[in-house]
Image (tube, rainbow, N blue to C red; front, side):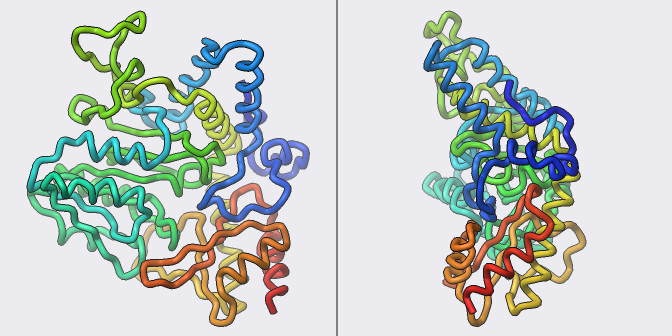
Length: 394
């Protein structure tokens, strides 16, 4: 089974250049983990091993299949949840759409999502309006900066579910998921989370979350299209599976049965043939980050983000605003910036010329933002490297 060296803490990996290159082989400096990240070494090795085994053997290799299914245990341990509550399904969009379609909402039920969230966490809920569901698209002063005070006025006896992102893809703001989840649960309102922008770098408290979906191609540095869906055990019998096949319905000897009996737990949401290579690579990425130490990774990402913010604001860059009354950890790994004299595409081009990948996004008001998303494996002098590259725009 391919993985990072077992038990190697982050600070040892950073000091061991050979081990560092094995886990993070990308030759440039990738600062777009909030978009699509490069594959980490263990994920690439898992894909290569799968391809080799299957080209000389068989795609339905039982050993590979069991290794893939064991990823449920690995992810469950990382998230501190029962593995029976996890489905190994593809992109975030699929997971969130499965939840939206499986809820069996009634006309007049109400759902709340964030108007300026990423489309994957808006469109599935908007589509419910054709079935008579009232969809509230919450607008906040700062994109993604959702607080309980923003949500509370929209809640009533018909509110069925609230869906938020664990971190906003543009501002990097992280709502207080624990507090919001607790308050919603006290009111009997379901809580759904798009966690793609935090899995791998920030703790994910699912104790008061009913549903969560995320792909692995960002901060986890796994493959695109391989993801995880969390469904709290309390909902396994009332969240309707929408993709039915031998992976979700009991079919002994692969024979169609006279009645539909779902597989136990969240496996009922997996449908048919699993994405074995993607799951194996995703599992390898999870194992690597767990071996490096979750708290150390979080601290490192936050420190690198802060050093970039300090260096760039000192040179006239403006960061995306944050609410002044934040009392919790308000930012993930994303740093979005603007400059009065340098356009985001200019900054992106300057860094690309220096072998550094960044991303540019436009907000709903038409303004462009330059996004930097450093990861824990980057060098401590990252901010200096970025400043030197930007000097080429002068």
